Image (cartoon, rainbow, N blue to C red; front, side):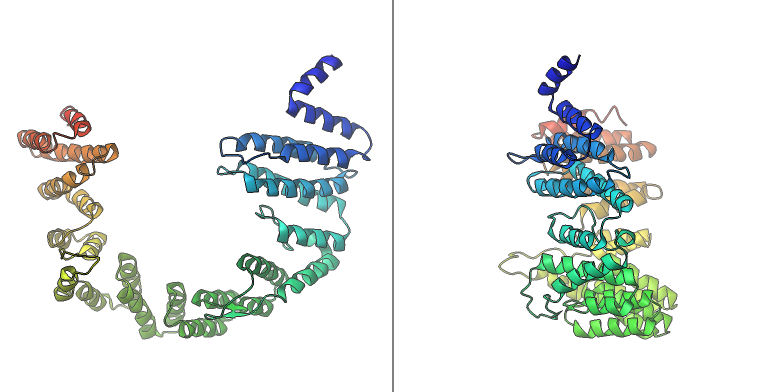
Length: 461
C-alpha cells in the first residue's frame, strides 16, 4: 500500500506536497522550515503569465499551503508559523504580478495567510523590535498590500517597545517627504508618498493624537479636498470652530478649483450657525456652475429647510429656461459643430419628472430634442392617466431604437412595441395597433432580424 501510495503521489503533485508536509510535521521541527519553503516555492513558481481561467488552479495550490500551515498553529510551532506565513505571503504577492486575479481567488488565499500570521504572532509573541522591523518592511515593500501589517492590526502584539520601533522606521521615511501645497511640484514618488502618509496617519490614529494627525495631513494641501479631510478630523474630535476655519481656508485657497464636498461641509456648518444666506449662496454656486438635477435637488433640500423654496424654484427654473440663451447656444456653430441644433431643455424635463409634474413634462417634451431615456420615463408615468400621450411618446422613440441596427436594440424596441399594444388594447384600438405593426414592417423591411421579432408581437398582445 505504501509503494502504491508513493507511486500515485509521484503522478499527483498536490498529493505529493500533502504527504511531504505531513511527514515533516510528524518529526522534529529542524527541517520543517526548509521543507515548507521548498513546497511554497514550488506552489508559487510561475513560468509565464497566468490568465483568469488558470488563476483558480494556482489558488487551489495556495489553499493547500494554507491548510497545511494552519496545522502549525500550536504553542510549539507558532514561532515557525510566523516565519513561514511571512515567506508565503511575500511569494504569493510577488507572483500576483503575473496573475490575472479578476475573481480574487488568489487574493483571498493571501488574506487567509495574513490571518494565520496574526494568530501565530498572538500565540508566539515574537521579540517586539524585530517583529516591528519585519512588519514595516512587509507593509512598505509588498506590491499589492493584500494584508495589513500596520500598527493598528498588530498593536497588541508589538507592545510599547515594538510600536516605538515601528514609529522610528516610519518617521525616518516620513522625513524624506516634502510638503505639498497648491500647485507646488512634488518630486517624490506618489505611491511612496501615499503609503508612508497612510502609515503615519495610522500611528497618529492609534495614539488618538488629533494634532499629530492634522500635522501629517497638512503636509499635503494640494487640493480643496485635503482641507476638507482636516476639517472632518476636527469635527469628529468635537472641535467645530477649528473645523470651520480649515474648511473656509480651503474654500479661499481653491476659489478657482472648488470642491463641492467642501462646499457641502460648509453649508451644513453655516446652517448650524444660522448663517443661512451663506449656506444658500454656496448651494446656488453649485447649481449655476453646473445646472444638473443633482444640484437642483440639493438646492431644493436646503431651500425647503429655510422655507424659501418657492422663490428659489422660480429663480432656478428661470435660469435654465431662458429661451434667448438656450436658443443662442443651440444656433451657435463652430469647426466642431457645423450646423445648428434644436434647443435642449432636458434638464427642465428631468426636473418635471422628479417633481412628478406631468403637465410641465409633457409641455417641455415637445419643445426640443431629449434623450430617449427621458422620453421613455415620461411615457411610463403617463400610461395610467394619459395612455394616448404615452403611446405617442413610444411611437416617437421606437424608430430611433430600431435604427441602431443591432439585436439588443431590436429587443428593446419589441418590449416598447408590446407596451404600445397593451395600451391600445385597453383603449379598444387593436385594429389601429395592427395598422401600426404593418407600418413598422414596411418602414423597416430590410432589417430582417427585427422583422422576425416583430412577427411574434401579435401573439404577445
